[in-house]
Length: 321
Image 1: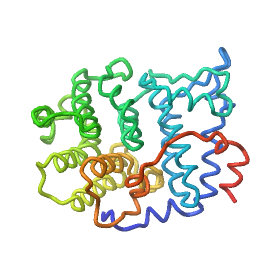
Image 2 (image 1 turned 120 degrees about the horizontal axis):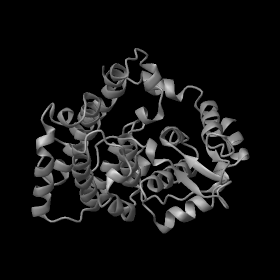
Image 3 (image 1 turned 45 degrees about the horizontal axis):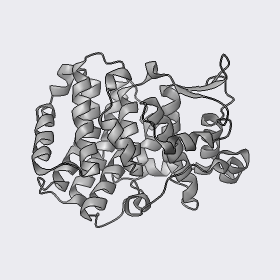
């Protein structure tokens, strides 16, 4: 399928304000039994909650007339994902303490439910927001303490790619370390190499969603001849193919719309985060904007903070009207 066809983008935009309001009410209702732990009065999130909040966050990026709403939800999502992987910064503590219903409650994430998907979403959110302190902590995190790996070899593989992408975003390595980092992931770029250590499902995630980001690193460090426009077109195509063709097959599901209507499909947070690093460090930008990449977040020096008023019932009503 051709990613440049915008039928799924239109599906997502259809009645978007009404859908956003419904999503906000479901995902941000902290009095829900599924989130509130009655035993100790704490807020307990699991992987499914994180996925729902991540998807909601991407949908808020379509509120073109109120950018501050998007930034509040982006900041909130990042705070929860960082908490899940024990990344603790002064900013995260402030963010969560200002939220409705969070003032006097402890916030926990059930790490026994975390998936590799959550790890990379955590990476993408910190790339996207340019949170260098959190990225440094993520680079040194022992993922085996947070994720239940079927094969321990995947811990090392994930760590290598996380280290590569974070080092690229931070721009804090010399030429010798750049070569070392690129060489370290080279053996896993061969088709079938990832599945030998895990399964085809994980191989597909890397092939369609992670390897395109590796190509951006090659570009930034001067090892890739393709233009930024070409790389981005290829990355977007792979992103769309994953959700439209690969993921339904992996899940034995024939309903493509079930996946294409998710916010993460139309807003490519990982690609956006790497493009932001390329612009910040090398001044390179695409020759044209894409409806799937929020250019105002890539090329502007945005500050991401939670505004608790955006989580109130009044704010939800404003979005739905």
